[in-house]
Amino acid sequence: VQLVESGGGLVQPGGSLRLSCAASGFTFSTYTMSWYRQAPGKERELVAFISSGGGGTHVANSVKGRFTISRNNVKNTVVLQMNSLKPEDTAVYFCNKYPPTAQDYWGQGTQVIVSS
Image (cartoon, rainbow, N blue to C red; front, top):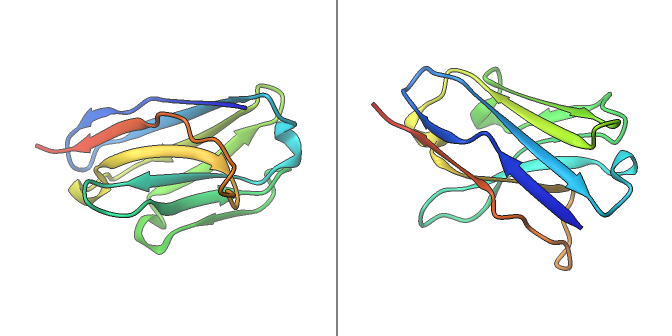
């Protein structure tokens, strides 16, 4: 299993970023996929997940109306579009299956910093 997150960076409050996760090593199209984030000194938290076929999504209340999750089962990618970013969105963002198990592999994540 390989999960490679990309697209993070430094952005001003109110800005946007598009995170992408490239997955391989498992049958991507059969799994619900998710984005998690972990801020310094805090536990990893669920941001959003999307069903295997892409027809069902859920986003955390903290990002509702600002973040959108989507997937491409041909390219084996899952995308998190983040708009109206706030300083509290600063974290390392990870993708994984949902729900992840203790045995599931975690990639290195992609750092998002929201700051003026």
